[in-house]
Each structure stands twice: as C-alpha cells, then as structure tokens.
Length: 94
Image 1 (tube, rainbow, N blue to C red):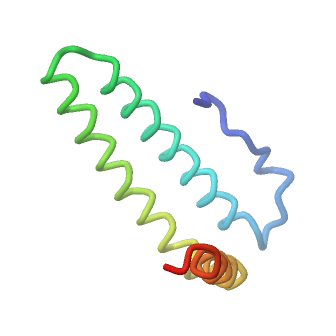
Image 2 (image 1 turned 180 degrees about the vertical axis):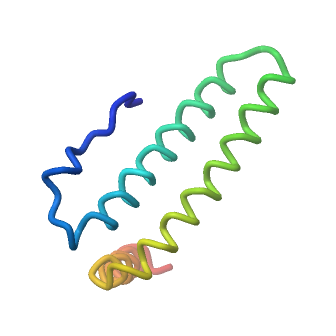
Image 3 (image 1 turned 120 degrees about the horizontal axis):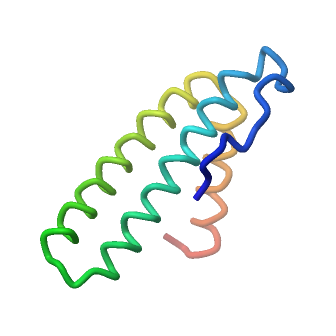
C-alpha cells in the first residue's frame, strides 16, 4: 500500500504524462482491491466482510475505467496485452 505517489511526475516527459498518470491510478486501485480483500478475509464480522468485498468490486470497475483510457492512448500497451494473451493461449491451450 502506498501513501505517496510512487512517481515524480515532474520528471516524466510531457508526452508520457497521461499514460503514467493512468498507470499510477491503476496501481492505486489494485492496491486498494488487495487491501479490502485481505481485510475481508480477516474479519469475522459478516457486515464488514460484505462491505469490504463490495468496495473491492467497485475498485475493480475503476481499474477497468482507467485501463480503457490507457488503451485509447497507448497502442504499445494494446499490443503488449494482445501478445500476452497469445502467449497464455499457447502455453495453456485455452
């Protein structure tokens, strides 16, 4: 879990700034998902568990929103995801 932005945005090239902003936002959402799911697994209070898992689910939607924007801006990212998909299919046959 990070409480500070893990990137010095002032050192990022202007033409890469939006991509980096979106990647950091995705990192933050993934961090929150992990935190909420871990806490849900630890609690014995069903109400807390339900709320934590619901919020984690909302964070997953946020990941999707940020990823959609990133894929609009970064063709190399699109190609990387497709390459990864092909590699998994080749390794698993699925």
